[in-house]
Length: 329
Image (tube, rainbow, N blue to C red; front, side, top):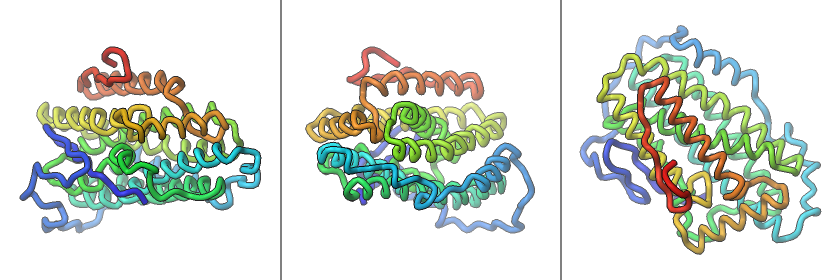
């Protein structure tokens, strides 16, 4: 499994690839005595409770609900299988991080006495992220074998964890900022890219896997907006600015560093190799997309996120810059 770099979202600094030092004495919420009794089980956020019930009715099994016999790996060249193995392995690495961030956020929900609907939903989310990792692992295995790390160690800084599990336990970083950055920014982009993949992936098994994950991600994204819709009216201008900065940090230090899209990673021989992996996998119809195809999807997703945060939250997200994209976006 890939070694996890750490990205800390805060108001003024982001640390990539090293343990955070901005709050050396803050400890974590685990160090703070708390009392979660009496336990509340009533409905306090109807939208999130409905998402929980929808999730319980929409469970699927990666081993039995995917028609693996239709993959036919023998139809592809060694080069195509090798590239697809790396692509699906890379997808699994990202899902591993999501598995660990869910229980960390569960602890934070309890610490802050959040609506019980949130903890219920995240209990199911943990299962969903686990099966996403499993189905990606199974795809890599079916194509010839799973890779447990990038071919080039230098690429780990782009594809490793965004560090949410550490941020979730940091009392100096607001839960609202964490959810906005993780869900309403990063997961919204991932959802839009997955929807794009569902439209262009040719192999029936790869397409089935993408669509199965996509159905879960719809709920994951809806959770973030439902939570913040309830919280934003109660927040001060200063608290909203923390949310704004968390989103900016997630975009600039994680997404634009190639976390979801290899073509956005800093230019290097390793990132070039990963882009070639995506290109070969895409051409074989086994998943993945290319810079040319994904760029308009990515830009549209950011524009949509910026508009929605402005209209619903009154938060202005600035334009971003990246050396591979002409002009601000």
